Amino acid sequence: MGYNVIYGDTDSCMIQIPATSLEETITKAREIEAVLNESYNTFALEKLHAEKHYFSIKFEKVYRRFFQGGRKKRYAGNLIWKEGKSVDEIDMVGFEAKRSDSPLLTRKVMKEVMNKILQGAGLPEMKKYLGEIIRTYRSGGYSLDEIGIPGGLGKELKDYGTDDAHVRGATYSNEHLGTNFGKGSKPKRIYIKSVNGNYPKTDVLCFEYGDQVPGEFKPDLELMLEKTIKSPISRILEPIGWNWADVDPSRTTLSDFF
Image (cartoon, rainbow, N blue to C red; front, side):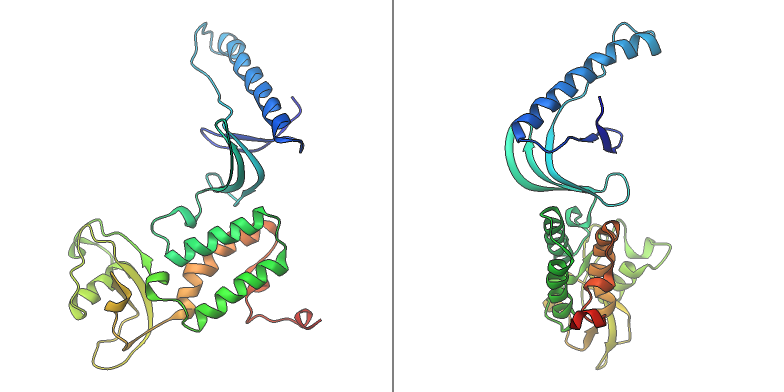
């Protein structure tokens, strides 16, 4: 029919339709839906030798803008129509903004970054927004509750064969901070740069609430920034030709002065 397929997975297929009014787009989509559903009759009979089949597709959504993050099941779009109703929302699939094991700040920043991209924001606007986030992060302006990395414990700590960061952090907190993390717990994790006072050294600990972490523990904010902001946000920036150095205020270049 002359349309480009821009995304597809096991249960979704998205095509690009030349920009027109929403009403015209819906009309074209309905026509495509009808043609494809009719074609299944011929396909089933000629390819499968079946007179009866259950193949069917349904037209569901219209996006104004669409973004794919480099792999299947990882996309976002400015949704303007869904199942018969006009809407105006950001639809995200597969990104950290939708995952319960992402920090609160990660989800907030990723949602705003994606919103800006889908609204057509350029690099200067993105650099301004993320630059402020990064500066605030490095200065300790976000609470531990905002940056802590959630993670569930599927079994008792002693039953884990390997001590990954979350297990080590939970074990340390149980032994030295009076917590009782175990099977079914979902503590938050932070990486530690230094420990003062009489507490044993550690590079990681877990907590339920930020105020449970004594002041003797100094978070490794640069490592936390890398894991909770740099890594997930870079996966959005890179497909559109930007990188972390473009938005990190510590990576000032000569062009920034002109």
